[in-house]
Length: 248
Image 1 (cartoon, rainbow, N blue to C red):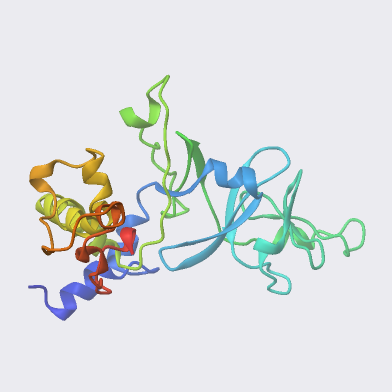
Image 2 (cartoon, rainbow, N blue to C red; image 1 turned 30 degrees about the vertical axis):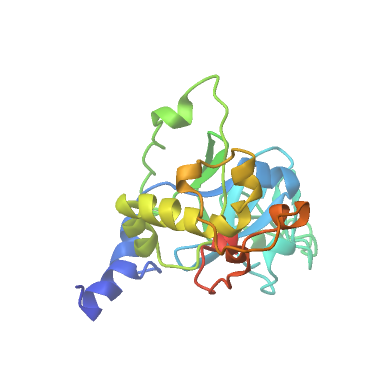
């Protein structure tokens, strides 16, 4: 059992934390490329930082701080232009490196924009995913790994997205637990499908008879087409709220 201190050390991933600093030294998948086909600008929260991912009119990807340096407007409300991402309030524009490249209200020849910089991180596309590197900006990022499943040609890739209300350690710990796959996703899932299967799916041969629910009760009344097709009493069993989320 972990101590409170050990748990805090492993689960905190914000800026300046031990695990946060470790994770920032690896490329992280942050979005699907298809999401940017639906919207050019989208908010991203990663390792305790609120950021904005965008694709400019030139097709370049950028990941920058959430707010404009001018009046702190959320840049997720901005829009892409050829030079980068434009704030909708006063038109300040940031390129993919976070440099301010336009300040429309400044007089001609002004160099004030050259003094303005917001946080930005490198991003790359690979295998239909967008990866970001949040490591030290003074160092060149490592090569984005070309693992076999990311670079196989002539394959059909399916990308799934989900927001899981737990800490990263809980999720990874569960991934290593192979036994739960059989019992939680297998036997327990099968148990909760019984009311749905009984009896039509069994009669149709969609489930082996040996595994089918037994008859719930006997009756002396003559069989009829109505009673034959009606669900058994197990179908009326009340499900507790702890049932698998995928079948609630």
